[in-house]
Length: 366
Image 1 (tube, rainbow, N blue to C red):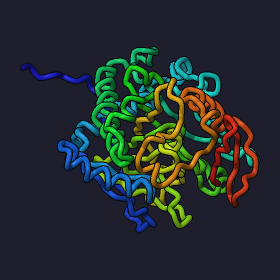
Image 2 (cartoon, one colour; image 1 turned 90 degrees about the horizontal axis):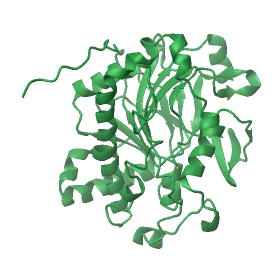
Image 3 (tube, rainbow, N blue to C red; image 1 turned 180 degrees about the horizontal axis):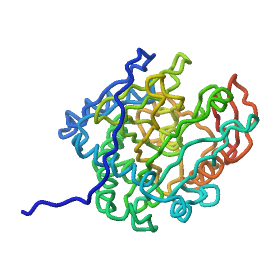
């Protein structure tokens, strides 16, 4: 067969991982290549269960993309920020507050990080919906759409579905229980997202105490982060301390969100994380991230999977009554529209702020 010639793309040069001895979280690493057999999936389901119930985050390796393929995606991921002129960016900028989902660009200074001190985010991101052809894209990105479509499908079918099957097994449910709630065709608002965290002024760093993105939970079921070397992601550990997430070459960092907490009856919590200023040896660099953000199909009612033998044994934690459980679409729209755009009230716990969505308290951690 003739070789496929890929369109040229400038190479994104990332810095070396930090050399500082930071307080890194001790996260488990699961080997997805073991999922080829029933025995391997049973082993992985137990490992994943223990990891997600301990820290809420887990590394995954051997996910089917080589280091070269991963590097190519990061090269493409930098295109929306480095190869598109500002006037064209503006054409493809959308307000998530109005849409209820992310598509195209989110501009910098859109989210209030500290309204009292007038500190706004310096994060620009570009989101590509599940169907990359659903919305037009900047000229510079169009040659790469076939590769991005393949990347989206790989995340969905080869990574997400594997994780959802393992979670179902951990709940002693049929493997396809959660897969059926995350159909590719019904995932129009699930997206690949490239995020560029830009450096901030010293004044803003002091005002925000070096926090770039407040402690929060993701609104969906599963988030897949492709590990990158500029440190900044921290998780709230079980002992109440914020710990750094270490970079591992060509690994995934996976966590659960609100919708998984609803569906699992609190067995899997929506995990709390934040982004802070990188360590001193990396502060000269901007931070490029690649994500696959996943939500359940819009028509899924976010009810606990009460028929799970595990939940029947350990009990169910509900954030609302079954009658008031929101649809996935409603939860997605409300969480997306409000994030960084509405005033928060002081929380009942120390260093927290709150908002109420669909009658449910959503916490933000300072």
